[in-house]
Amino acid sequence: MNLEQATLAECFDAVVNQRRSVRGFLNKPVARELVEHIFTLASRAPSNCNTQPWATHVVGGTKLEQLREILPLNTLRGRMTLDYPYEPKYHGVYQERQYDAANQMYGAVGLERKDKEQRQEVFMRNYTFFGAPNVAFLFLPEHFGLREAADVGMYAQTLMLALTAHGLASCPQTSLGFHADAVREVLEVDASQKLLFGISFGYEDTSDPINNTRMGRAPLAETTVFHDT
Image 1 (cartoon, rainbow, N blue to C red):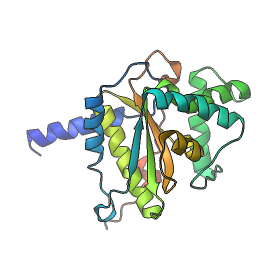
Image 2: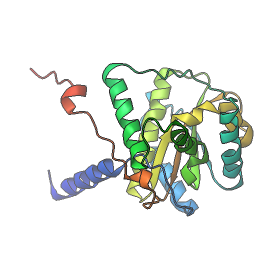
Image 3: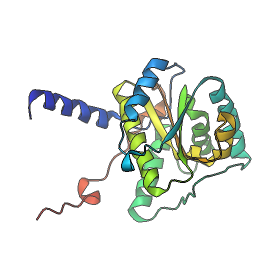
Image 4: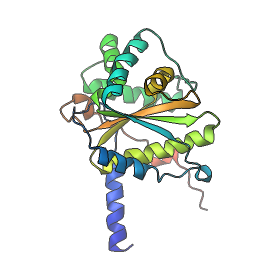
C-alpha cells in the first residue's frame, strides 16, 4: 500500500467510524450547493444492472414545516399508511440489541423504562425530524421488489457517509415510512412511488444530550463467517 492509498484508507476509516445516527440538529441551513454535491456523490452507489432505482425527494423550507405539523398529528390520531409491511417483533440476540439501543438512547436523556409518557415524547421527535433543516425521502417505483430495495439501502449508506465526510449529521428513519400517503400528498409525489424511509440531515446540535448516545456493534465473530480453508 503506497502513501496515497494509506491516506485514503485512513480517511475512509475515520468517516465510517464517525457516522452515527444523530437525533438533535441545529436550526442552521445547509448550503444548496453542498447538498447537491453530496447527493451527486450518493448517486455513485451500486445497483442491480445499474438500474439506480432510488427516487429521492430532498425537502426543506415550507413543505418541511408542513410535514412537521402533519406527521405528529397523524401519528397521535392513528392515521398512518405504510407502503411496505412492518413487523416490529424481534427475537433472540436481535431483540437484545433492540432493547440495548433503546435503553442507551432514552438513558442519555435520563429516562427509564417506566417513564413511558416521556419516552413517547422523545420518540415523537422522529416526526419533527429532530429539528433538522432537511429530510430526504427515499421512494422505490412500485414495479421494483426486494433486490431493488437493497439497492436503495446501499444508496442510503453512501449518502450518509458522504454527509459525514462533509461535516453533516444524519439519522435514517424507517418511522417516516409510516406516513407514505401524507408525504406523497405534501410533496405531490405520484402514487406509483412507494416510500421506504427518510433520512433527516443537517448540523449536529452537540448540546442535545440525546446525541451523547454511542451504539455498540456486535463482535465480528457474531456476524461474519470466513470460508477460507
